[in-house]
Amino acid sequence: MKFLFCIVLMAAGEFFAHAQESSPEDQQRETIQYGTETEISALIQVLKNENSVYLDEDLALLMQTTENAAIMTGIWAFFGDREKSGLEERALQTIDSYQDTANEIVIAAIEYLGKMKNPDAVEPLKNLLDTGDRAFMNVSFRALGKVSAAAPDETALYLMDYYTNRNPGDENRRDLISAIGETGSSESISFLSDIATNNEERPLLRTAALEALSKLGDSSGLDAVLSAVNASDPTVRASAIAALGPFSGDRVDSIILEGFRDSFYRTRIAAATAAGERQLESAIPYLKYRAERDEVPAVKDESIRALAAINNAESNEIIGSLFEARRNPERVRVIAAEMLLKNNPDFYTQKIVDELDEAKRARLTSLYNGLRRVLGQAVTPELEALARRFITTGPADERSIGLDMVVNNHFTSLESELQLLTQDKNASLARKALRTLEQLGISPAKPESDSETLASPEENPE
Image: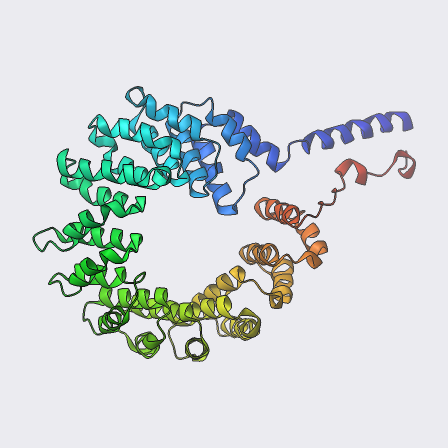
């Protein structure tokens, strides 16, 4: 009887061991190997949400063999959004064989190469544009501007010639102008200035030219920007003010300040953006007024960000007052908290944590969630206690934020709490805890297998 029980016990142990052979990571790898396009797309979304990279090699291998449009576009987008290399060769092959490939696949390949700023894509993109196939023009223009760093002048001249002599179509001209600005070539300043100052030109193209001149930041383009400041079209005015950020001089400063008086809200946003980019201290009282009183929330938001960009004692004191005043809208307080954590986290963290707890007590859900989010992104040793609290007692989304705090701040002192979280029933949290340990350079503890927890034959009655 005892012998029979031992055999049964051994069989049970083998069963449990086999059941645990397929870990969540193994199951995900099996999905990549054998899953449908729907299953793989869902997995990629999970990896995005979890900011996971440990399956990149598996996805790259799949990319070498699959012809499925949904899978290919999904993987290129997943890699491109993170500027993760490794898929360039397949993307270049796809462009070369565009006639035999679905348009959506070709477009995804072009977008990936653009995000990677891959210089090898310059000639293939030109060849594709030379075919005149309008299905790929927009995306090819945008990508060509981004990949042109090795030959900016040559690429800019090619794009300007295309615009002037090759009839790209009105629907493509804005992207073409933006691409010219992306090249960074000073050869394009005269061309862009002519468009920006042409009162007969469509506002859409004038704003694109102004944005391109701002990207170049070359002083020889300043006159064109200044001439557009008083344009009759409000979108052109707003773009001209926004474009002043990279330029210098008293006249530029004066025009930015005047932009705060414009009744068109986008011009006030542009003035705030330019003031922040230039760290224009004379704009502080204007920004304070807009942050406190502007009727448009987006103007308030950008004014607070501009004050943070100026980042001196006066501007930070204003932001602190905006955060501490509980009568202010929750949106204002959250953005103010985000800026304070960016500029002076050691001083403001505890104050923001105290307001987080008060928001929870008062059931101010949106304020609580907003403060929790910005605290999760902060870098300061003052967050260690909150990180411990989140990963040990919070709900699933809060524990995830706590893990972000641990990684951002390298809180190795929380190793025991992290090891425990790797065994959580929530598989997503457990995986994230494992990755957090790896990012901290800590080896995860080996979990006890079910078979090891079974009593030995000698400890059981017959």
